[in-house]
Length: 602
Image 1 (tube, one colour):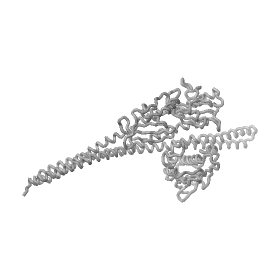
Image 2: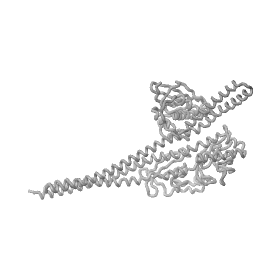
Image 3: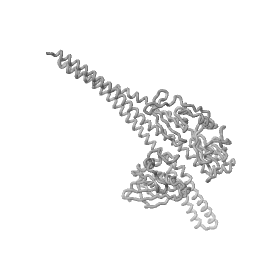
Image 4: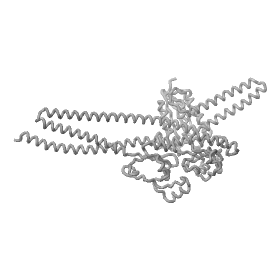
């Protein structure tokens, strides 16, 4: 018979086997946990970087939109046309002062006016030793393209300053006649400085793979790949990039596994986004070294848990063996276990604190995204403002001309001692000044950045304000907007933001019609028991099924120079009112957009 010593020897051998198997399982668990932690951390880093990519794109797009309205506004100013057609010294002095003031206000690097031969006749730097006035820019592509096509955007080095920038040019003249070109140069030092403050590396390439913007100045005007000899020679001969070497980037961006790239021994995840400027592409290099480091604590935690498990197993096993030795040894093992539990509780408390900190970081990121959304709404509104400012000027010129005529008539009637007729003329002048005030107030309200405030809005007033803002486009295209439906109905909205939505829908309708001979646009107001429906329709080519599927996707657009945010912002504005924005199209008979708002009880 085997006694207690033999039994304890058998149990000891079995215990060694159990510990070996448990140790192997724990080792496998540590490896798997570390790999899963690395992948999870990498995914979190990429998700955060995607938000950074959107912010970087929005920052660059906002900078471009802020300057694109400048040449449009200047091209319609009478003083610019007067300087081109009769460049008297007094006129040119006024234009120089005007360009200097605009450059300071907008932050543009340069603003200058070229005549039809490409010679600079006015510039914001007219008082400096490097003044552009008198220089010949006829060879510049942005001048040739603007004279031929009406406008251009061209990135190049400055012929005098040697600094790179984007040149925005627009033809000045009436109809097909071109009297000259207005040019605005943008430099992106502020954008690149903002990129340098983030963990990710950002760079922008053009269609030839030349890096035009970068968070690392050493990478600018290098290429992602070696240019073929003919293309490299053409770029150097054009002097677009000055004396830049246009040599491949060193260290190069080399693809590795899983879509990642390697730069100088460091691994990155590349994120790309197309930009609506000369086929530019925004590339964000996201470092994933932190993900590998994140796996270390998880492995340590798994090892600690495994060690704790091994201790528990050892305690259970030894407790079973020591049952033969008495209660004293059992009590000692129990105290040791309680100590281990206290240590684990401390570790879990620290992990909980870390988790709370991560939640706070996420809340701050969400607040930042909400602020960005508000800025995008304002940028969309200012983009429309550049298009409608000429129409508002025309609307003001009409009552001003009428005021002048009535004032002259009133003076004549007073000289003839006809006070009653003169009073009627003065009353007419009073009404015209009130009309000018209403027009200017609508324009100021449309441009002002105000927080949304949902109140009771008379729909007719918002419709009339929107039609006033697009009246110039109506006359230019020769397309009238036919209003139908109910009048004087009220809905829950914010008038200025509702006008912004209607202006966006009407502008889209004008662009959809193009030069169509039988172009028609309708604006109908109808009601149900609970809703007010404002429908904007056109008889253009309609929307394809593919376009309908991505219509409300950010940065998805069918326009060559569109940002793809107008309908997205409009939908968000309407939903903030508690309403909805829907679209219907059969692909043949135009499109119908419906703004559905909560009806205000009569």
